[in-house]
Each structure stands twice: as C-alpha cells, then as structure tokens.
Picture 1 (cartoon, rainbow, N blue to C red):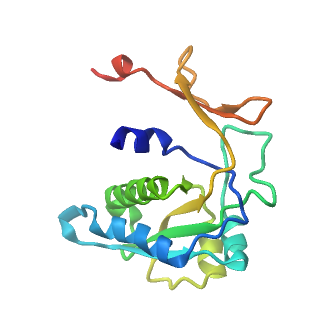
Picture 2: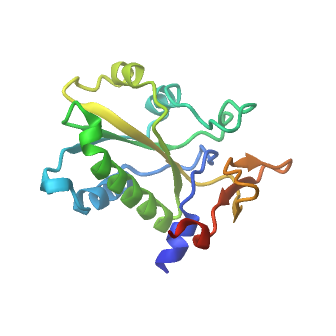
Picture 3: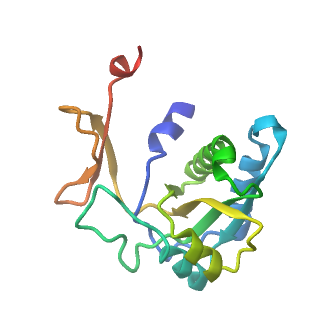
Length: 187
C-alpha cells in the first residue's frame, strides 16, 4: 500500500555498511526520478552515484548528520551508508530546481523503500569539498546527497507534544520522530 511506503520512508542514519547496493539498483532509482515531473519539463537534474567504499567515505566526510542530536557525530564504522546518489543541477542557482530536486528525492526514496532499502536526504553538505573530492565538473551544482543502505535502526513516529518537533533517540537507540496531528495542520 502506498501509505505504508510513506510511513516507512523516514530519515535513516545508521545502516549495515557491509550490505552491498548494486549499481543497477542505484540506476533504477535514478530512473524513477527521471520519469517524475519536472518544472516546464526542463529536466535540469543530473545524478552521480557511488557504491564503492573509497568513494563512499569521501562523500561521508562531507555530510552533516543530525542537527538535533548534538551529542552524536554520525554513524560509526560499520553503520555507514553503502550507496549514495548525489543530485546535481545544470542550473547554477539551485533554488530554480528546488521543486524538481525535492520530487526526485522523494521518488528515489520511495523506490528505495520498495527495494527494502532506506535513506536520508542531506542538504547539510560541504558542497565545495565534495565537488573537489569527486571531481564533479563545475558546470554542475550540488543540490542534495541521498545516503542509502539496509537500515540498522528502528524509527518510531509519535505525536508532537508541547509543540516540540525535535527528533531524539532513547537509551536503546530507537529514533523517535514527532509528527503533528492531521487536525493541527489543516487550516
């Protein structure tokens, strides 16, 4: 059911690093983005994939992992993503492709969930460093990075209490994500 895909599509940050993601699966996920709507059908997005450990670690070094978890510096070795999709634009002003990039991210992540993978979208990226490390031509602008892998964490949705929307982890490592109630967001 489509609703189940949406509910399972959370921001996962810990993975089974040893679980290999095949290049063909990453290409299939990009194909979902390719087939998705694009403003004025301009199709200005491009994609770079990685499923090799050395390149993955270069990407990992450029990401900010969880803003609300101040005492956590990101996944430990063994929990790193085993694949990445970097969303690029042919447009220098990435705000002009923000809608397209958002649609592409959602399409990719829903496809990942359907394939028993999970992921996380990163806007907190050292883009200049990443562009240099991966030798991405300057004619492309980095929009987002999607980390992918077999999930190694449990995420639980719960109702927002006292207007506190900050996600958190309990002592067992379960990741809690407060969501506003439907009645509270319909005007």
